[in-house]
Structures are given as C-alpha cells and as structure tokens.
Amino acid sequence: MTLDFALELVIAAALVIGGVFGLIGSFGLLKLRGAMQRLHAPTKATTVGVGSALIASALDSVMTTGIASWHEILVTLFLFLTAPLTALYLAKVHLLTKPPADLPPTGTDRGWSNSDSPDRKVTPADL
Amino acid sequence: MLSFALTFALTCFAIGFAMNLLAFARAPTIADRILSVDTMVINGIALIVLYGVKTGSNLYLDAAMLLALTGFVTTIAFCKFLLRGSLIE
Image 1 (cartoon, rainbow over the protein chains, first blue to last red):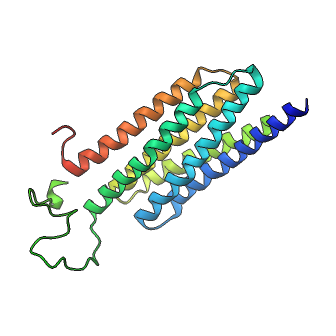
Image 2: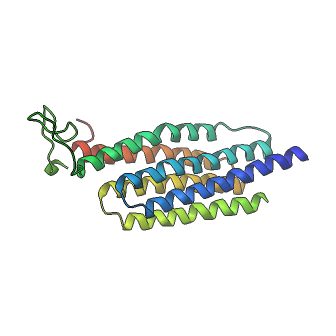
Image 3: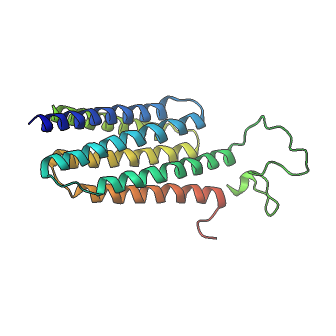
C-alpha cells in the first residue's frame, strides 16, 4: 500500500515535470527571437518532457500489470540519440541559408568552409 | 492524484502542440518551419504515450515508436535536401 502510494507519487511528479517542460519548450519556440535560440528551446526541454512522460508510462505499466515494458526505454533511447542530430542538421541549414554577416576574412582566396568548398561553390541559388 | 497529473500533462502537451502550429504559421525561414514540425512530432509522441497511460493500453507505444522513427527521418530528409539539393547522390 505505501509502496504503491510512493510509486504513484513518483509517476505524478514525472508527469507534472514532463508537462511543464514540454510547455516551456514549445513556448520558447514561439517566443525566442534568434534562429539559434529557437533551436535551443525545443531540443532540450522537449526531450526532457517526453523522457519524463515515458518514465511515467513505464512506471505506470509496472504498477498496473507488474511487468516492465521495453518500448518506453527504446523510444527514450531513440529520441536521445536523434535529438542532437536533428539540431545539428537544422543549424547547418540555418548557417547555409543565412550566413552570419560579421564573419572575419579568412586570409586566403577562399571563403569560410561552410559556404565555400574546393570542389563546389555553394551559392544561395543552389538552396 | 494520478488522473489529475495525467490531465495536467495532457493539457500541457496539447497547448504546446497548438503553440507549435502557431510557430509553424509565423515561421520566418524554412529552417524554423522544419523545426516547428519536428517539435510537433515530439509533442505528438508525448500525447500518444500519455493517452496510452490514460487508457491503460500497451498498443499505443508502438505507434509512438513509429512516429519517433518517421519524424526523425523526415527532419533529416528535409535538411539534407535543403543542404545538398538531393537526398541520394
């Protein structure tokens, strides 16, 4: 009885934390000004939010059926592996479509490597 | 207590989903639009998982897993297309 109550308390805390983090992540996406700042808010906060929701789901299945299911752990692992990749690719797209205006000169006849390559010159017309 | 927390979390993620729709409509660049769709997918995963907790069913986790996979592939495909002009070179 007390163990069930403690488990229920932990599940409720995970649910509330996850909900608040998910809300903060989406609010940051809407509110922040810079494109890189907008990238920061959802990739961190929403991963914590979904992670807490999945922990709550796993503990709930332990509490109701007594069997721990592996699906939650798989989904959490997959999201934690892919969130940095998604952020990296979105940052690359942002840097290519809108290069920073205050870049110092490179000192060579080539530009910076993310907009100028030895093989192919990437111009905004390519995008 | 658990049902109150569950309703709170579901409401939070639903409001977040609506905020993502607004962010998608107001996005200034295409990278922001991809980011808002990616966040929408993540919020949808959370909504599906919490609905599975609410109904006590184990089936919804498979749908959440599929959505996580396709959401990641979609985002990477969009970004790759914008970066290189094609998906498979």
